[in-house]
Length: 423
Ligand code: SF4
Ligand code: SF4
Image (cartoon, rainbow, N blue to C red):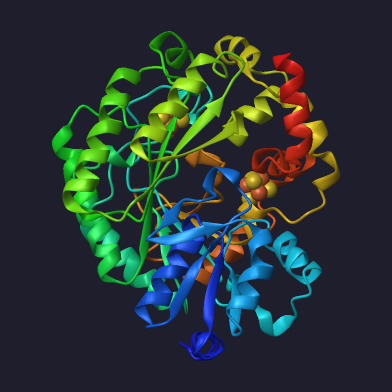
């Protein structure tokens, strides 16, 4: 294994004031590399207004227009672009600010693959938008063992020069995993930051306490309403009153253990939840000092989108489509000009399921058609990458234009369309 590149990165950062562009998981992971190597980060940059003025690991998050000022203040400033998507866009912005090659670093030049380990292969909810409600798909359910997780981390580190963060979720609910706290602690002991996403409709306070104590670096709470009548239409099987009480508990435990967790409540926008429900949830997040961001809900997985395009959608999903602020057809139209871009789900991510199998990408779900390795521990990274190439599943997906739709590119047009549907 050649670690020269990692040394190159260290040399580039030595004696510089580091500004990290990207304050979510990739940036947070990189900040762990910064502190593990005794370097100095002065803050994060993020264009998302939901994050402005917040702090991650005690470092401030600035808007991009603060860079000029910071450059004057810190003569040896270097911006490290640490994001999983939109890297080219950001580099163009930096160039537009007059920054030259020595002023910024693309983190992806050093960190080739982003890993997701779906430690839980099951969920307690049945959201109509989610793969778990596709009755035609019968994937096995279970949890990754701690021993498998350790062996997987060993292989990940052996096959990559630099891995600074891992997401511990894909389709499953990680808070159901009885040993999630030990999984998080193990990743940290290997110098890797962790991201967890949860519906937080979890009845065990003890489990929440244990997880907060283990201090995942990033914790996303996904929800879609404040009152049960609205929430239940889109997060079916969950209990929003339980979620709200857990948001309080989360704050209590974070303060009690002085945990450094960046909590982001991600509010899925539908036609029926943008009024009082959204306002009340914003108020609650403000009170508890959580970041709240929103996204337009869409339909997953790829298999369901194919069913839609081929006229095979089940009746439940058909009725649910009425709630979307941006219809599938409109979303596909908005993102049509971006179909020729390389699929980001294919190029820089490796997903590993709870049972060690490897799916083609994070938006395919059916194990019968999307498995590219039955055992991550046996197949080499090269073999796995090879199996991704020209996969039959990609042909239809690309033909229909799903990757830019699922990434929500061209947000300006999404906003315009959503506003039209709200007025
Ligand atoms: S909570 Fe998340 S993983 Fe579970 S069914 Fe809903 S969308 Fe899917
Ligand atoms: S083209 Fe579609 S199926 Fe293939 S990796 Fe990208 S998102 Fe997944």
